[in-house]
Length: 336
Ligand SMILES: [Zn+2]
Image (cartoon, rainbow, N blue to C red; front, side, top):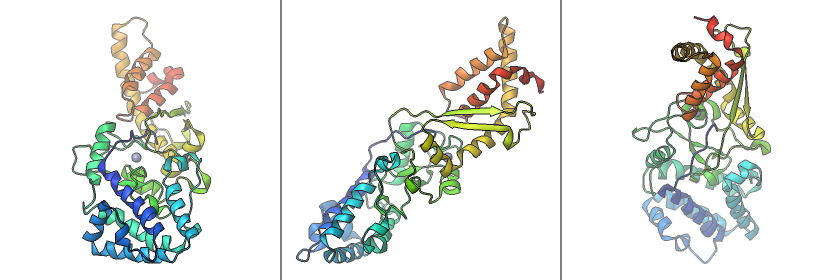
């Protein structure tokens, strides 16, 4: 993640709270003498009685839980709690519990139902808030114009009737208890979500990953070096080396999931030609007004200016290109 989302409060988080109640306080406490319905809280009961398909599924799973051992019930409850500590899982301070360590009913019955929780319940607006409304508020609060993951793609604005798709950051196929947890649902651009990440697991084999929601400072340095023996307007992939500098393990995962290095390479090469022209134009103006003005001075001016809104218009990459040109300013004049 080039940037992290500032988290917001929203009613849509309530669906996950209902799910937690269902798994931990209803199913995991199933007993012979009590009905499923008698254990539901008011919020969940309202949805339960509204949808026949949902009621049937919930009841069926409840009756299976009645015959599970206490140890099995406890293991499901523990898995629900552990797998929802998303930030800790991403940092590697908690290890996830996978489906094969749990009673069969979790994969066979609970998992498909929880996918329906996401795909059917959220869409039918019978639950608090909608994805569209949450998306708009999140984008507005974060003042995002570009995808925070790659910084390259333009994002649907808070005023749009469309929105970017939500990525199940830890995939719901492996972590069904996270299917409606909005700490795990991350709006990403199509190129990041569908083209690159798909169902890849950020924390596969103990890998560490950025947790996408945080108020903390998050700055990744993009160190870019161009082979100066080449024509800067016609660069090939191998003429440009990009190092992403920050938390090494998490950056490795970011790159594995979203192909960041290659995408930054492609975009930077395309940007270089027009950026050279821009630098020359700006330099001509500055040099007219000031004595002994050098290309280095122009680059410093432009970099300072771009830093103010570096996540707009791919300026963060342009800054890296200009930093690389700083010690080779003689090259700027070579091209028309
Ligand atoms: Zn993106």
